[in-house]
Length: 256
Image (cartoon, rainbow, N blue to C red; front, side):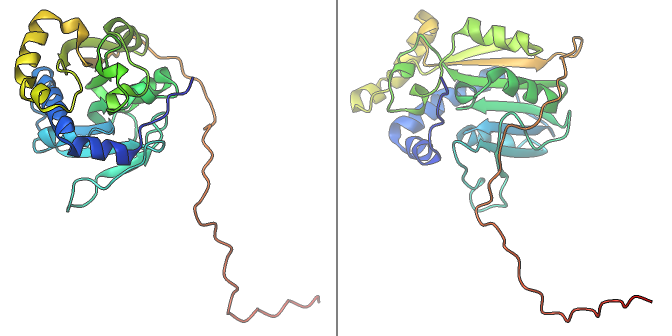
């Protein structure tokens, strides 16, 4: 069954809410533990990663925000030249081996074909390039609540994510967890967030709201190459019908 993307409007509204800001802080702290600074590297955020890209882009050579067509896109960074592109995650508009790092947030759980998406990321990553995936944990309570973006799409277990990475020529590395507090808007729960995060990480990490896994592109095993035509059909919003020419027609040549 195809998992529908969360709409861009709903994603923005969530991250502008108090619960969304708390979730962003929790995930960002976990990301910092698995990903160091990115000096002069090229970074792509795939999905809706803009709340987390701000933390890394100051050190990068260039940062792009790739947003899936099924989700929609917004301009980012705000009040600057746009680094956003609307894409299909199986056909990224990048040359081979052109990107150093990829950050997937609100992405893999909505992929039509997760393996094809991962193979495409493998293609655009440079040798030794690294990938970080943030996905809802199928054992966590956040995946069971539909009022946040983490409750949509297909959640993963750590074993499922590791198997997918190995099948698509990535070597799994550092891992982390986040979102140990329940996705409640009640003030008392939000005030206890720090304590719940600390205790949850120590006592019940298997029940985190999201799983975060870093992986490295593996080079010593080839991927099978299959020639396939694009399955996408591009329909222009405005189909041009042409404008009648105002130039005089040239006289037709007469037969000798």
